[in-house]
Length: 254
Image 1 (spheres, rainbow, N blue to C red):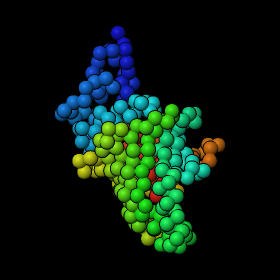
Image 2 (tube, rainbow, N blue to C red):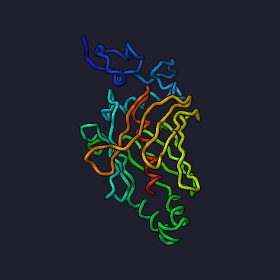
Image 3 (spheres, rainbow, N blue to C red):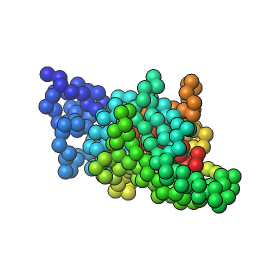
Image 4 (cartoon, rainbow, N blue to C red):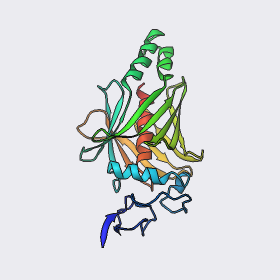
């Protein structure tokens, strides 16, 4: 008798199933294994450790991302905390990466003191501010946080789940001419994500460590301001490319 569906591939499963019979993904009710055997959907292609998929699967299921391949990301320009809203293609709100308004205000104020946004020193000072983002669902419930360690030309972001378990670490570097490069590694330090294309203009690919395409980011032709598309291409938990894309955009607009 069918009682649940796989959060990864959507296969119908018995109510007492601990793992998906099709792709091997643990069900939300399954105990977290101490040692997970590698599977095609476990994240091994991303270089992630075997300990990371269970909490990620729970976040994906809670946010309603399972089975979805196409998303809209909207920069909420009126938010002092530089928040970003993730929606499905029907513009239904799925989750938000919410910035801290106080930290953002402090960084901008410091930047203005040393030259303002029109000066190189002012922009670099504002970008050097450490920040905390909160990952919240459509009802405002917190599911994790992102910790930023700022720097003039390089920033590091760490995504943690609600228990404080590290999921992945993103490094963003800014070039002298305004370009941005971005990479991400798992909690074990193994490469997960990289980019190619024009990050500043929202026209780039997100790839795994071997160079295979995982997601495409491009401008959206929709009637929503400051919005762009993130389309999943390869086998990847959507939360990774979505957060990756949002943090790239944050560095672009700062």
